Figure 1 (cartoon, rainbow, N blue to C red):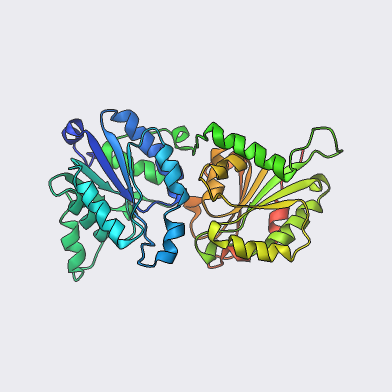
Figure 2: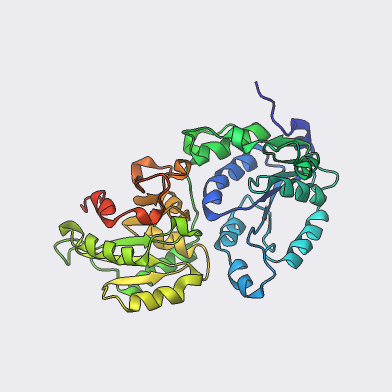
Length: 375
């Protein structure tokens, strides 16, 4: 039997805990379940989360997008999260956040950061000089003295490479972390993604569809209108799909007899909206709208919830599709199968042909080949 890394007596005495992580929306889609399980197992401990912005920069022109990161809305709305640190996108704010966290005198700090783990080991100890500090620890050569010195600041460590294995889904990996850290057992069903959308945003989505003219009375046409959401954007070019391919796909979908009465929503990240508008203005694409969750994160899942089908590259949208229980076609590279949508009954994965291929190598014909029947 493997002993949990954070002793039970430490957790019994703790009144709060700080988790440090460089979270993306996809990460939190699955880690949210782990945080909820922790809250249920240790109801006396308040959960604080530090979201570190790995794109931290001194350039003010970048801050307008970094400070509006949609994940902050989602985490702040979680009933089991008491405090959120989300001002880490500039060096001065980063230092200010450290000072704020030091005032909390955290009895336990856990770094879940797998990128640059030595840096985060040092950050965790800087925040809590006297607390019990745990972090990720990857193998390092004997000559990487700075890494070994950083790891010595930890009271306990978890090697994320050893905690993963071929065939494990990311939700299983994260659940394994929390089992090793805290002794928490979770069932497979409790690892499915979920999102609790406030009523304000479900109302917003319904009104938005009415404004777009996408809500029609049942029975008015021979083939009932369907709504398809297409997301071609991801954080890296390797996971994006060309906009030209989106237009081709839209036309191909409507060329199918059972899908010819289809309305389309094309998702655009806020910083690319101007370019996307300019591109689509040159296209002759009817009954479609560009969409971006520019006001609040919950705009996105609220719109997704209203759709009949979601087609997305490998990014948060395909995981949120599972969370709102809408069928999804996920366009993925072969490189990271552990990040495929977890709800296999409602998900179809289309892989790029070769392991080194980017998502852009996926053709429209591949997508149309798995298009479900419109019944």
